[in-house]
Structure formats: C-alpha cells, structure tokens
Image (cartoon, rainbow, N blue to C red):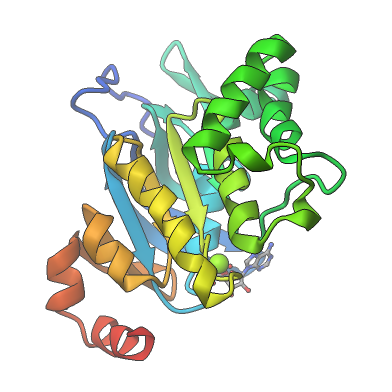
Length: 271
Ligand code: ADP
Ligand code: MG
C-alpha cells in the first residue's frame, strides 16, 4: 500500500550516516482515537550521541520511544531511523507500508530497556542474553553463548550467568536486560525509565553500566528522571510536556539554566 500525506515527501537525499542523524523526528504526531498524545515532536539524534528525555508523567515520552522502536505507527510528520521512515520503505520514490515481518527485522536493530526488566523467568541470565541472537539473528548457539558471557562480564555479572531472574536483585536483572539488548548489536538503544522501578541503592550500578555504554560511543535515547546522570552523560536534554518538546539543547544549559517556566518547575520537583 502506498501512502500520501503526512509522509508526502519521499524525496530524501541518500542517507549519509556520518552526516545525517540516526534518529530524525520532524513534527511527529501520534494520536489514540481523538486523543493526540504527540503534537509534533522534533528531535535529532546523531550516531554516538546520548539524548535524555525528561518530562512529567503522561507527557508522551514512552509513546515517542515506542514510535522510534516501530511499536506504534505515527499519524503525522516524519520519523526516520537510519534514513528510513519508520514503518515504511521507499521504492522508486514512493513509500510503501512495511509488512510486520520487515518491521520486526528493523526493530531487531534497536535495543530497548524497559522500567520492568521483562526477563524470561524460566531462563538463566545467560539464556536470556543468548535468546535474541539465536532466534532472531540465527547465530550459532555456541558463538552466541561466548558473546553472551562477554556481555555479562561487561555489565559485571559473569558470575551470575547461571542464575535465574528471581535469584537476582532488581539492579542485576536490569543489567542482564542491558546485556540482552546489546547482544543484538543494536545501532541504537532506547531506555524507558530504566531505574525507576529500582530500590534507590540499586540505581547506581545500572547508571554505571549506562555510563560505560555511553563512553563507548553507543547511541542512546534515555527517558529518565535521573537529572545527575543526564547532566553528566547526555549531549542533549529534551524536556517534554503535553506531547511537545518545550525545550531542548545542551544538557547543562537546559538543566542548569532552563529557559521555560515548566522546565524550571519540573526540575525543582525532581531535584
Ligand atoms: P509518559 O511516558 O511521558 O508518562 P506516555 O507516552 O506513556 O507518557 O503516555 C502519554 C499519553 O498517552 C497518556 O495520556 C496516556 O494515557 C496515553 N496513552 C499511552 N498509550 C496509550 C494507548 N495505547 N492508548 C490510549 N492512550 C494511550
Ligand atoms: Mg513512560
């Protein structure tokens, strides 16, 4: 099926990963029935950048991540990941809706880490990490296990490879979830409040892993209320309220000297 507006301009130039953003949202609109949740989101994320999204509950942060991750179709504007419209492919200058199968293939290139860790409860930490590469990427199990052990080591959990999720703390489970996301060799990792469900004393170990990942050059979009982390790690901070980005820019500028009253009052509440 071809589509017309709002995706009306398929005449994009050839995508240049060195120059063009990995995520390019231009006026992204998302509605549920007659409820408009995203009112035109503009955001660019370049390869290697960390962007933190802040904003009150219900402002559309999760919805926006879900759009980037092909879990929702957008209703207006344009959303490009790696130069390709999310949910569509371009052939002969026209946009065609992707089949579910093709969407799943593209989604495999994006890692997602949720507030709740969503590990398979009846599988060990290592089996959780190995599952995606074996089932989706069709990697040989032995090679996937070797790589899985490397990744568990990277998140400091090689010694827990044989443990089941219920035997791990929340922080450890979340670190396994991060290793699981990395096992797919993602181009981009989306984090949706990855530390919000954790006891305060476990937040630091998860943020440390994310900090290492950022230092290693991973492209990350992080929804978080951890202002300290955002200040230290993010290149860009965007503040969302009521489905629009009210202000965005250099992390320190937005966090230390916000221009908008709503950003200011939000920060005063979470700090
Ligand atoms: P945030 O992550 O910033 O808290 P969400 O993206 O979860 O915000 O939600 C934004 C708004 O969209 C909320 O008003 C929520 O009720 C609504 N919403 C989210 N998902 C759905 C859905 N599947 N159907 C209808 N409304 C939804
Ligand atoms: Mg949310």
